[in-house]
Amino acid sequence: NFFAANIRIGICTRELDLYEELGHNDSSWAFNRFDGTVHHNGQWVNYTIVPGGAKGNIISIILNTAIGELSFSTNDRID
Image (tube, rainbow, N blue to C red; front, side, top):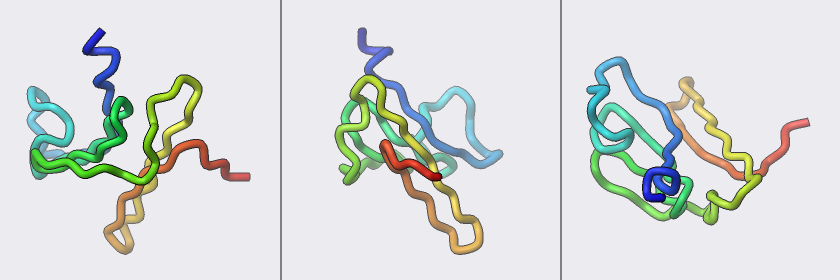
């Protein structure tokens, strides 16, 4: 099923058009769990946490607004 495979998680600003895909504009950033790519403004890059889509993986979003940094991680545990 294409839609089950194309799940993205991410963040957006208030300016996001809710009819656009997450990561396809300059108002959102998204991690595609199927192929491990990060999407922003219609462009994508391979990310070092591939593969993110394996069953049971935990994908985290870390946003540091103080320094303007967004990162994603897979299976990292915070104790």
